[in-house]
Image 1: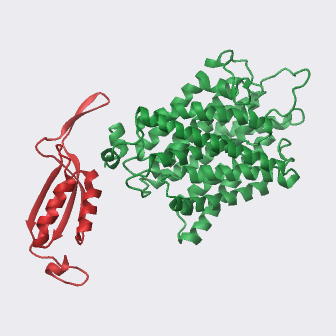
Image 2: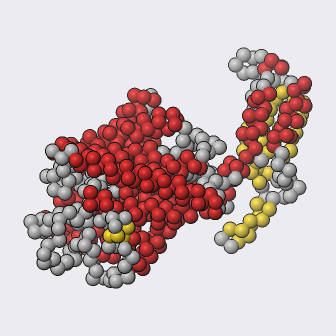
Image 3: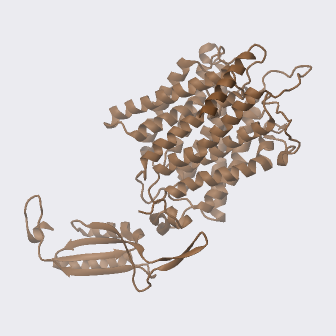
Length: 112
Length: 445
C-alpha cells in the first residue's frame, strides 16, 4: 500500500480528480495549502508598495492505493497536472503501514 | 435618521396642504395636453427635499445594497470582483449620464425612439431649470434621480455574469449597454417615446429597469456559458441579508420617489412597495418550505427582492389588494423559475438576475395592466376596472423591451468578445476573479 501526495496547481484539481476517478480509485483527501519551491515566491505591487509573496497557493491531494496501482496513478497525475510552466508542483510517494476503516474495523488493502 | 424622519414628515405635511391644488404627478407620460397658457413652473421645497432624499436612497441601492447582496452570494474568491462590478458601473453611469445619457433619454423626442441632443453636457440646465416631467423640483435633482436608475439597471445584469466574466469586458459592457439599450428604452417609456404615447404604465421601472436588465442577464449568461464550478456557494450570507435590507430600504426612494413629489401618490407607492416585498418574502418561504423541506434565509431575501421588483411598475397605480396579489405572484413564480426553469433550460444565471428581475419585472408589468386602479392614480386603469386594452399595451411594452434588449445585448457581447474577450482563462476562474482580475482578496484569513 502506498500513499501518494500530489501538490498541484489549484485549477488542475478538477481535471486530475476526474481522470483518477475514471481509473477506479477509491477516494482522496484534498487540502488547500501554501508553499514555495526553488522560485521562493515572487514580488508583487499593491497600492504602489512592493511586497514579497513567500507562499504560493496550491492544492494537496492525498490518495492511498495498492502497490500495483501506484505507477498508473502517478503517471496519470503527471499527465493531467502538467502545464510545463514553473510551479506545476510535486508528487511524493511513501509506503503505508496500515489502513483501518473506522466503521467496520477492516484492515489492510480491503480498507482502501 | 432623525433628520430623515423630519424630512419625510415635513414632506407629507406639505403635500397635504397642496393636495387640492396640484394634481398628482405621474411618472408615466404627460398624457394631458399642455394647457393653452402654461402655468409658471415653481420649485416646491417639500417636493425638493423629498426628492433629494429619494435620490440618495436609490444610490444606496447600488452601493452598498446590490454590491452586498451580490457580493455575499458570490464564492469567497469572487466576492470582491462582484462588488467591484456594481461599483464601477455606478461610476461609469454617473459620468455618461451627465455627458449624454440625460439628453438622449429626456431630450426632445425624435420619432418616438430617442431624445434629442440639446442638453449634451447638461447644456442649458441651471439652478433655476425645471423639467416638464417634474414640475416642482429643480431639474438638477431630476437628472440626478434618473441617473441612479440608469446605474442600478446596468449593475443588476452583473448578477448573471459573475465568477467568469473579465473585468475589462464588464467595463466595456457597462458603457455600451447603458448607451445602446438603457437610454432608448428609458426614453420609450419615460421620455415621451413610442411606448409612452401608447399609454404603457410603468411607475418606477418594471420594464425599463427589471425586464430590461433581466433579459440582458439571460442573454449574457447564455453567451458567456457555464462556470467551471456551477454550485452556488455564498461566501457570506449575512452580507446578503444586509444587502437585501438596504435594497428594500432604498426601494422606498425608487418607488415612492417615482411620484416625483412628496404627495399622496408617493404614499400609495410607499405602502404598496412595503406590502408586496413582505408578502413575496412570505410566499417564497412557504413555497420553498413545502417544496424543498427547509425555509432558507436566501429564500426570504430573494422573495423580498422579487416582490420589490414586481411592485415597481405597479406601485403608483394599484391598491393594497393589488399589491398583495402581486406580492404572492412575485414570491411563487420566480421561485419556480429559479428552482425548475433554470435547471431545465440549463443556462448558468449565477445569481438569478433573470429569474428574479426578468420574471418578476414581467409579472409586475403585466399585472399592472390588470390591477391599475383609477382611484389611486387616474392615469392608470386596468383590466379589473373595465379597460382590457391596458393589459395588451403592457404586453406590447414588455415584448418590445424583451426583443430589443435581447438582440442588442447579444450584439454588444459579440463586439466585446471581438475586442477584449468576455471570459477569463480557466486558471484565472479557478484561482478566483478577486485575485486574477484585481490582485486582491476579499478575506485574508
